[in-house]
Image (cartoon, rainbow, N blue to C red; front, side, top):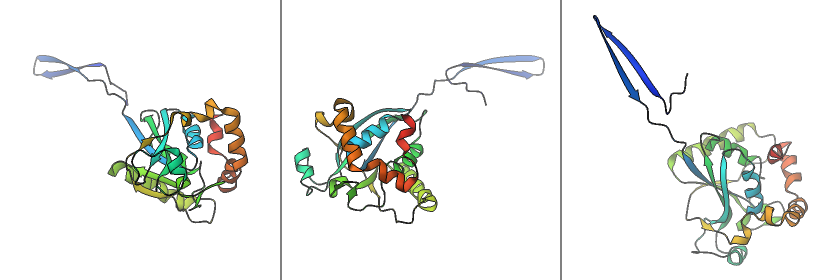
Length: 211
């Protein structure tokens, strides 16, 4: 099928001996920019993993799911606000779909741990997907269903799919931490055992395909 977006199309109709030419101008179809909210443990790592994906325009770190308004990192890390460390991913759905990002998400985390991720334990480090509308809920649940059927490990998946609440942007020093403090970030990620556990579960580290 040819893509006629943004082009002028000419239609010719013949009625008896009369030929009618109609010119139809097609309005260009714009890419739809969407957002996805996910929690996968330390938001530095989740931000790093998703910013590698083609079609992702930006990833910001923040807090969501709790009760405290405008929380600070110190408050969230006290582990009594109910907030997750999370990221908001902005993406171009002509280049990458929500389903593709969701399928990728599972393979960047340990979805079997109800208490946190890797060396980080406590409520801020739980995993979750936060749907902003019914369609996102459907996509998240369909992806989860497929993962549950095909996962290469026996443990149950405990990652929650929850309605989105207010997303609070984290402090500036957390944004792009993996770029601003690359040596410290790499040391933290390695020493926390993230890659080792992901490889143990999934057989490979999904984010490494973008290195």
